[in-house]
Image 1 (cartoon, rainbow, N blue to C red):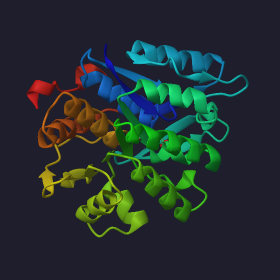
Image 2: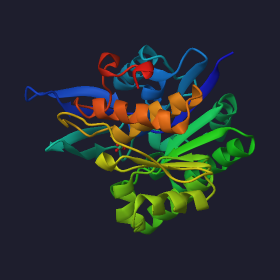
Image 3: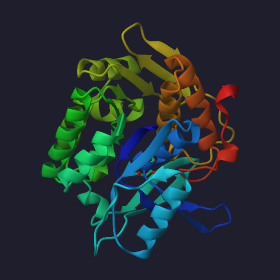
Image 4: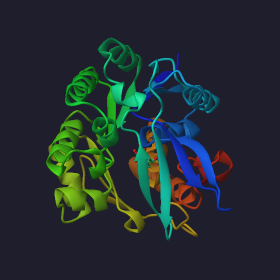
Length: 307
Ligand SMILES: O=C(O)C(=O)C[C@H](O)[C@H](O)CO
């Protein structure tokens, strides 16, 4: 019986630059991207499942077909009559991305409204993944419900992986964002922050400070992503540094961190030591940012044994 990797969050319609001046429609969202890259590198002994809410409209149907076509289970996805998927557009400046969102009334904002459905999905899983964006889109009550269920998962011995993915625009203010993200970190066993965001919003002086702050909140492992400066991993022993992998040229940095997380978790679940898992995940992230959009075809991805 395969174990389940469950990712919780919002998948949106993605509009990215196709290269010929046209916009390309895709489906993406940070927690979905991580599920997608985990699926690419996990074997059949793992099932990857996505938990979200969608509408009953045509684009929601298309998104579900896309998920299922990628081998990602959607059996816990709630369908809400009258709601639609959110949408975002990627803007690029010298390869660096920024996002514009249309998601204020998306179905996914209600993903944690149904506590029984949430608990059933989490009960089925061996690993639960979520992010600061997952927390940002929820009402305070639903956020507390989700965190309580995830805390319970951790107490039951499940692995809980979390990316703070700080997006100030999705929060009413920085204080609320930092408090909620810290609450998220308190229920996680593995945390994948990005140093530039943590420096901007938590004031960390260096990646080691970010790693220590999250370790002090109770995580067993923190892998701090720092772009070209590589990754710092802090667990029980001393901090390990893993260099970044060169990307040539950088075309679109969307999903660099999400793909790192998915590939790292897959390699970790396959039994690789953290340093090797991070080296492989850095290579995956480098390939991802050479292509437009969050999700790139598996033909562009490295093979695990080539890491
Ligand atoms: O910003 C978001 O909420 C997204 O999920 C869009 C992108 O896919 C994601 O941020 C990339 O990390």
